[in-house]
Amino acid sequence: MLKKIRKSQNAFAYTLLAPSIILLVALIGYPMIYNIMISVQKVPLNPKLESVFVGLDNFKEVLADKEFYSSVLITIAFTFVVVVLSTILGLAMACFLNREFVGKKLVNALVILSYVVPSVCLIFCWRYMFNNIYGIINYFLVDILHVVDKAPLWFDSPVSAFVLVALFNVWRFFPYAYMSFVAIMTSIDKSLYEAADIDGASKWQKFKAVTYPAIKPTMVTVVSLRMIWAFYIYAEVKLLTSQVDVLGVYLYDMAFSTHNFGKAAAISLVLFVFIFAMVMLIRKVVFKNDED
Image 1 (cartoon, helix red, strand yellow):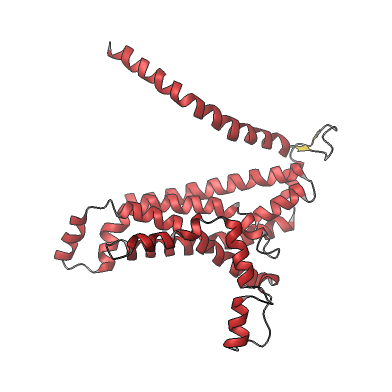
Image 2 (cartoon, one colour; image 1 turned 90 degrees about the horizontal axis):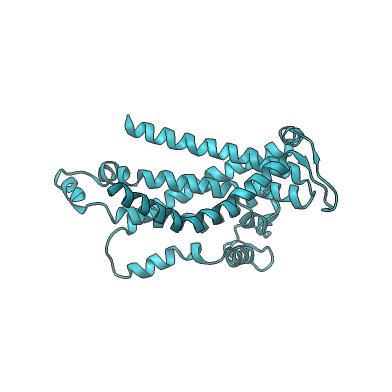
């Protein structure tokens, strides 16, 4: 009798999950399979012409492309800076604001504002602020503080453009880490902190012994997701400057500027394998250290 009930419950559960599973297969499974098919073909721009099977030639072309490696190095540096700084900033803000004070709801709203406002609005605000003619940053540096004699072209130099794009993305996405950490910290038993206070523990000791073990799984998830998003970032870079050739921009240009769809598909598969390996390595190292 119990077996029949369990089978009927499982069937009912699968029936409820069926629309979501079908949707996931349609939106994720089919594009992935199609991308794999394109990666081993030379796809003509004219849809009336047939694609030509080229085997692994697209992958060989990717691995022999110097611009690809240059873009990979830029993306790794960009990802490292953005993920580390946004995670640290989000964690610091969460630790500082994880207490009761007047105006807490307003402060939380202001903190997450950069995350909920559309990227395009924020991007053009930054372009306006750093404009070399009428930007407020150059106005302060040149006309008020007299730090420089001539207004810098912030987004025309590869170095300054990289710094500004990285800072923009740290500011844009650190609220995600902040909200994730706050959600976990509010669930930590307050008696643990009270016991640590009785033992005379410092703030760092309380963080190390109580807070960090509780937020570690969340931190791994935050870092993993931010790595994936940063590696494939496109709009936040392309709309700010053309001087930072991250992989998202390189991949887009390869597909829609040179119309080399096969090579673009091969690049995306190489990136998928690389990012998947990196995420698994990070999770393995973190949780292995936790077990030790």
